[in-house]
Amino acid sequence: MTDLAETPVSLPTTEVSLTINGEAVTRTVESRTLLIHFIRDHLDLTGTHWGCDTSNCGACVVWVDKKPVKSCTMLAAMAGGHEVRTVEDLEGADGLDPVQEGFMQCHGLQCGFCTPGMLMVGRALLDENPNPSEDEIREAISGNLCRCTGYENIIRSVRWAAEAGTSENGASQ
Amino acid sequence: MQVPAPFVYERATSVQDALALLAKHGPDARLVAGGHSLLPMMKLRFADPAALIDINSIDGLDQISVADGIMTIGAMVTHAQLLASDVVAQHFPMLTEAERVIADPVVRNKGTVGGSLCQADPAEDLSAALGALRASVTTIGSGGSRSIPVRELHDGPYQTVLDENEMVTEVTVPLPSGSSSSAYEKLERRVGDWAIAASGVSVSVADGVISEIGIGLAAVEAPNMVAADAEDAARGQVPSAELIERIGELAAEATDPNTDQRGPADYKRHLAGELTKRALRRALTNAGALTNEGAL
Image 1 (cartoon, rainbow over the protein chains, first blue to last red):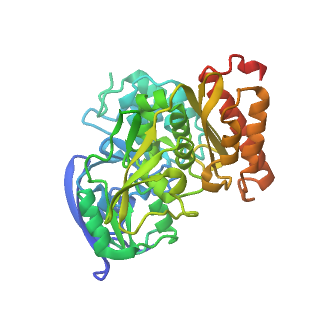
Image 2 (spheres, rainbow over the protein chains, first blue to last red; image 1 turned 90 degrees about the vertical axis):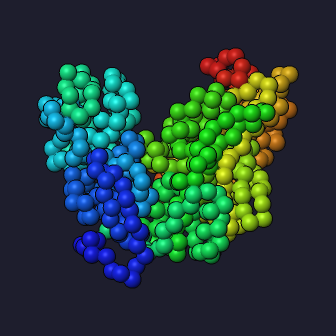
Image 3 (tube, each protein chain N blue to C red; image 1 turned 60 degrees about the vertical axis):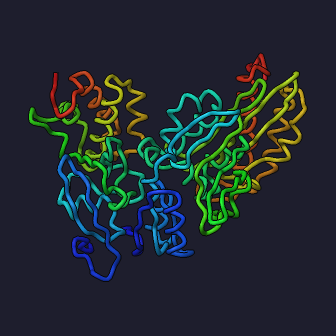
């Protein structure tokens, strides 16, 4: 794999300043750098997974201004000036986010590849709708592929989080 | 690993700024809105712009409003915004129904109305739905502002009639008159996929006859993504089960689908007819023009 952190000087670059998990960062990167590679290769935050590369699988979902987006289909430059949140930020001072706890309790993962995307979509759903039905959870994760669980345990995990408490930063009730 | 070819990135802060940047970078510059159609094509090197002009920082292009019998949808309104809009659902149920089956919820957070139309993908749902609704796009270019009917916006697959230095700023949709409704029917292989075939039908009924009708078709290679002959045949007619059958047949005849991994041409042509009938039946029922849907 090409080391994207090494930027040849001849290619067009862009200075990208954004907030990631509450921290302001600035990096000068090739203009064509995708947000997923900016996060993983330039900021060394490897919790977000780089999956299908075609905006189908959802393993790369992060939040941009509190909305889940597929970071393989957004330029890092386009995220400049915005607030990005990744899976690393889910755990708060009081421990795991209820969604993370739910995935543990309900066996919401096997290989774990889809998990960061599922967690970020699950958290976003619960922030908007603290008590989602099974159908609403299925709809919310319909842009995220899992090849292990058959989805049933993921839906149970999100329901577990809804019942355990939905406050941000892991403040379980 | 899919990464676009190198390009110069620019961020426009106003429509005039975007036009100036388009002029500065010449014919190989492209505007990027949500990027969820253009970036995948750039990653596959099907698109190779020398400069990418990001229009996400332009204020005021993400509003939905209604005034003087016209709904105005800003070019940067996202699919998620359109889906969540009560005023859209009230006037154009077809748009809400189409949005529910466009891509997936995460992609809908980024993809935009203007970007979808300008991508000019023959399988794109909003192009069919907004064509059925006789919407127009408002553009601003070096020659000033103009209005282009959505039905005339595409100039072949992935090509529009827009000039090099011209951008879409909004979509205008005339509110229907009389008793009216609309419906969208799409068959897809799985959530988030492009249509195998899709049909959107809008009807207005006055004095017991169909006073106006729009039929949009996606993914079946209908000219301008509409079934014009079927529309002409329905206008002025009394709604009936026989009429719905006839309109479905005419809609199927308007298509020239390709056999591909989504299905054979015959199947898609059949679907275009069947989905048109279903959408027309539902639209007529919801407009109050068919009182006994079950009997049809």
